[in-house]
Length: 292
Image 1 (cartoon, rainbow, N blue to C red):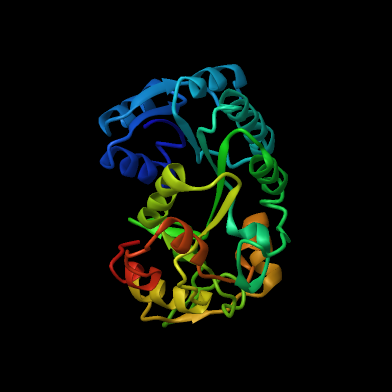
Image 2: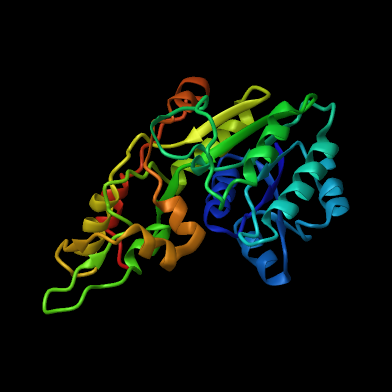
């Protein structure tokens, strides 16, 4: 299949690109510069230099492919506008073709819950609230085999938000401790970046129209457990200290609000419908083998 991919030089998108190429797909990767073009070219993809805000260019690129996986986001105040433009362009290019379009949202849109499923109501923090209406449009579009993937907290290969934990403040004294994100009793639902990449490709190949999948491994440790593992990895012998919620919000802003959510999910739907089988090391095992 000839696939148009956005985000192919990013953390998640780069793994998706590798998975697409390794499973025999032809990939055109949307990039923003000649330098980024060299990166995807070296991985076996054809680069296409275009901006995500250039709807006409994206529509033309998508119309020439067999399907689209959209992972990229600016990650700033333009994210909602840019994503709406990109999604509108892709759906317009694919309309009435029944070709696949795989879109990205995130598990944070469901807010705090100890048993998140695809039917759990949305209760998004401000950081990701803009994703909710766009994902709804994608799923309700007819004539395109749409699916939406909601990644959990992504880790692996030294990337992801575990680095936010590792960069946390240290307490003073002769036995410093790593300051946690908030009280530490909240759970984070997690997924290895390579397992997530497999989910995206399975969705491209097999997902029924209007599908929605939580990209969650089923491993949901507490922030304390994650922080203690990071503390050991950075030489603090597992010592951690909680952080008052107000201080976390002052330190991390909107990201802090999202990281204070208490979330647990299984990803069972993707296993049942697509045959997805997460098999990489858990986040705690991965941290134990990572140098921060």
